[in-house]
Length: 92
Image 1 (cartoon, rainbow, N blue to C red):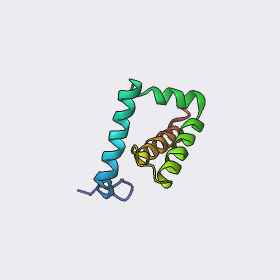
Image 2 (tube, one colour; image 1 turned 90 degrees about the vertical axis):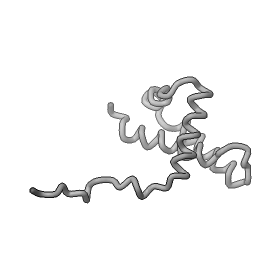
Image 3 (tube, rainbow, N blue to C red; image 1 turned 60 degrees about the vertical axis):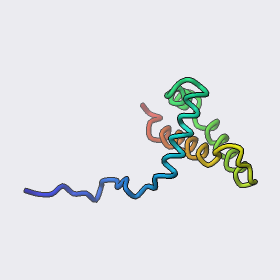
Image 4 (cartoon, one colour; image 1 turned 120 degrees about the vertical axis):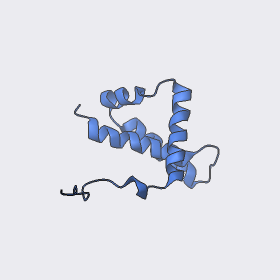
């Protein structure tokens, strides 16, 4: 019996819980605000990532300048996550 080669597998235990929690909370905020879990996918396929990159940059700048009125880093993670998803799924 041979063991499976694990070198190509992603080790998700390397990820910290806190950033993932903030990312999930920000996604929930978006679902509560906009009412859909997946509208962003269609929008990205139709319009491309410019809106999400702009939003990520805006939130990052707000964070850099000290605005803590909302979870700007969670918003950056969410927007960048959408763009990454788009890169991997744009041809679907």
